[in-house]
Length: 231
Image 1 (cartoon, one colour):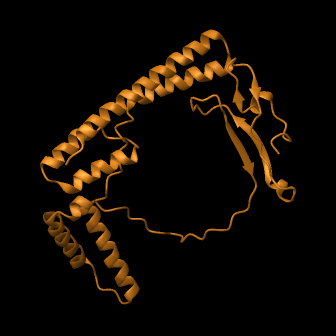
Image 2 (cartoon, one colour):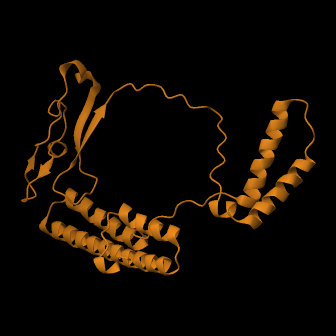
Image 3 (tube, one colour):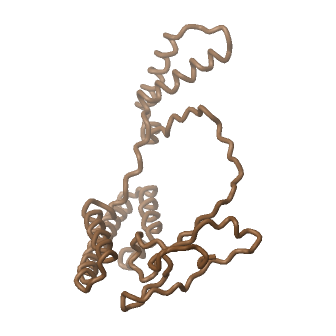
């Protein structure tokens, strides 16, 4: 199917040879003749930068999916702040605020109206005292410096794709090396900071934080040096 759609040559090649000129269509899409009508388009995506001589292959299908019924008018109140839920002072303030709100409400005739008043009071008191959980912060591996060098690298690659000259190729390689060095440096700093935090939690016998930091390292597929392991 990948050879049936009319595209420019640059949108058909998957692999770029080391001479930076030869494009080969080495990956193809196969589908049974009964379902070939589902295939709407197949083309190469040159835009995404993956630091490879391969390009992404985009496949467009026209497939009907089953309907997913979602309850309308769903009241999403967010996630409560877990640290405030564990704080006895905050819980006491929450009870006082809830009692104050409920005492000001008038009695309703129906049970549904009465429940709506109670629900509204609980949410209002929670938003006032408990508050919502802050959004998860982005990893320290990614900051403004990394974003800047990645943006410059992508811009250099875009210019190289438009004008494939020796100068543009060298400029792109230079920016790519700068981005790789910057990301490696940030990762090294993050690992050292995380290891220091793990050691402090171990010395303070804070088991929960200790295993939480180790879990973060595992999620990043990072191997700890043997000299830092705690026994």
